[in-house]
Image (cartoon, rainbow, N blue to C red; front, side, top):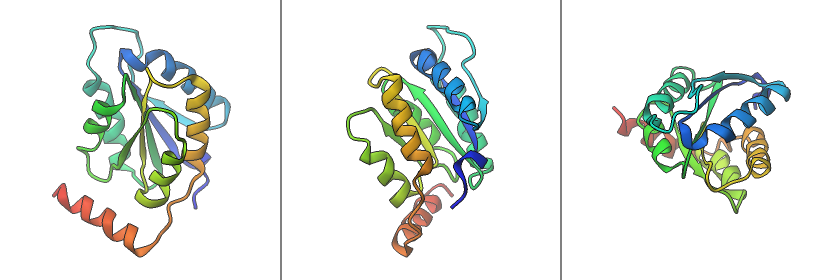
Length: 156
């Protein structure tokens, strides 16, 4: 397993997740992570999430073994839909409550993008979920690898 602090974390949001993203970026940097912030860099209620999320997802797609993405939106759903359009990206949504989902997304699906429903979670809850998600390894079970390969072939 790669040390999660050796990963480059690609971060993006629109206005709906701007406040949470700002706090999480500062926290991640303070924890020693390499963070690339793809925006939004200014709070603009009229911006559109695909403009920023695509940049982060494209960056993860281009270096899927050494990077992960953390994206934010109101619910996180639309953001995950955008991210999953890119090859080698396996985005899942976290909108609070059960943190076990972030662990399972890593163990079984090797998820490399976490889409956070910013209007549904607190800063502290997000931090806890991110620690779990960043530190949880993929279980290299042949059935999980086979399934992930099948997902990837759908994009071709």
